[in-house]
Length: 338
Ligand code: FUB
Image 1 (spheres, rainbow, N blue to C red):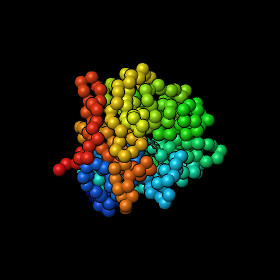
Image 2 (cartoon, rainbow, N blue to C red):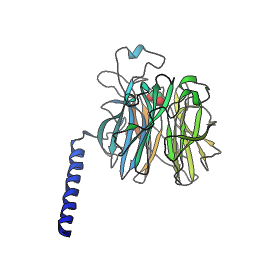
Image 3 (cartoon, rainbow, N blue to C red):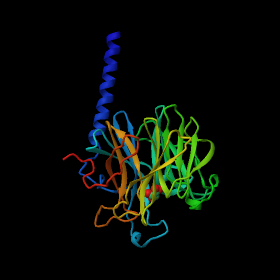
Image 4 (cartoon, rainbow, N blue to C red):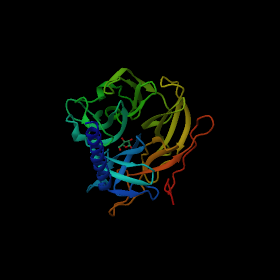
């Protein structure tokens, strides 16, 4: 009987592994040839996550449409889905395709702006920016949940996690609730920061789908949008898109705790090639740190890069003795091995 059970377990494991391998083999793949990293599509707002030895990279899909080049007022963007890519070594990348869309939130009417996925207790929480429909207004933050890094993901609460009426209408009014970033601290406490024109910060409840307590405002020099939270050792980092000379660059602040005080530490990058926006995504993987961002240097199907046709890139990130991040030079070679 014991032998039979052992055989059964082995057979099940074999079937499960064979299934996984087949899945990996059938995914489209590409090699890292430098920056831009992703060259098959226009992509933006990179959000890396490491799980079980694999780096997952979530991005928005910038899509060309007829008339895009003369559009203005936010219509330069046409982003209707989020994509996921993964790698075990930063060189060979698998393409998992579309993993979530604004239409997966029945209260949203579109616009797949910046997002981030984090894992807690074996669940994967996908925080997104969308355009909310009635009865909500403006930009809003939603949260979807799944049992695997590549989904399927389902709207976790059936309504926005943050909508316009919940925050002060500072510099950017109805569209300041964008670009969520979440840090799960070592004690399990999760924090979310977001915002355009104003940098908001709040605790999340342990269920990851409700805010816990007040929404604070973090005062950061030149803050525009795209915050990214990470921790290295005992130091907390809040990296963000700031206003450079007419276009965005990346700046950051550090703090000894998520409660602050946040100290401005300077610019991390210059402006991105050909792009008004830039958006940080920072992660440690296999003993190195990486800064993901986007520029608009790619030409695809005869369409040049533009404000709404961006391309995700990656360069290595290093720190100095006191935890400052050394300025990152945006390179063409990226982290491709030659
Ligand atoms: O991709 C749309 C918006 O552009 C993002 O939400 C911002 O961070 C900026 O990259």
